[in-house]
Length: 371
Ligand SMILES: NC(=O)c1ccc[n+]([C@@H]2O[C@H](COP(=O)([O-])OP(=O)(O)OC[C@H]3O[C@@H](n4cnc5c(N)ncnc54)[C@H](O)[C@@H]3O)[C@@H](O)[C@H]2O)c1
Ligand SMILES: [Zn+2]
Ligand SMILES: [Zn+2]
Image (tube, rainbow, N blue to C red; front, top):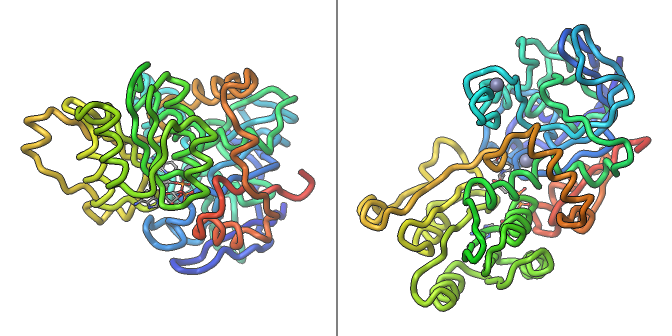
């Protein structure tokens, strides 16, 4: 069949919205019609060269939609089911999946290649194979994906809102709740208030942090942070440092979470200086893997027993966390509708990324045709 999709062909190029060929589902796979796709900074990393995928690749890894067909052997999903996609596939039986670390599933190795778990591609054009970002490619009207990547949800949920539970919400929320293990009374510093950082703010507030200090140079981001549970917001890391030491009587923050768009040694160093003895810096934001973005004093690490913790998908289990966050949304404890600053058509995908780079959006969302 044919589908319209936003394809990246090389570093520095814009997304090209074009009609491509799509194979139907093989064993263990499902055909999905995407209703909505979120614009996360990780796809921008592919475009600007910070993360190097296999090109060409259909962008998009935050998605929700409706199953239209299933391949042989699929038992967990049927046509008509509504799903939120997990940007990490979960096979359920590798070492990591079977020991409560399914966010580290071995299938994650293929995310930037974008082939199916068995190694072949479902998107094609002119005889060339095209991958799908994170084995999804949510910037396509339809895609064939692994059943390992789709979490079934109730039919009455607004897919154009719960789409954010495919990446931004569990990543940010889990960075605060799982990776930072926020406890009641904690002081938490969050560097960078985009689609990830705002959910770290929500997570820290919901976990009972006494002080949630959000740091972002942009005033609209700081205002949003305060609406989502930040008790304080600062324009610079220096201002935050001073405030945190005042708030904690010279002790420092219990945890700091780095969710800036491009991680730099400076921001990690600021976070490391802001935490107390025995405190943790969670690094969730990404940068070029060839760059050493963590440059710290080992002696301070040792003598103050500070910790640095990386976090992928908020260090949670997608098939557990996605349904749980849906329930938090239903209960009114987790805000989603208010996170969506702007919506776009698929053809406006490049404008959506320009708005992300210009700092306009908390989260932008593509609404697919017919949604
Ligand atoms: N680890 C994971 O599982 C995971 C998942 C998704 C995204 N990410 C990464 O998380 C990062 C954030 O993604 P996003 O979609 O929220 O990005 P975004 O562009 O929407 O937001 C980034 C924010 O950081 C702010 N910022 C930039 N430099 C800053 C600084 N020095 N101090 C404070 N704030 C600063 C920007 O003003 C912006 O508001 C990206 O690197 C993305 O690739 C990681
Ligand atoms: Zn993402
Ligand atoms: Zn696995």
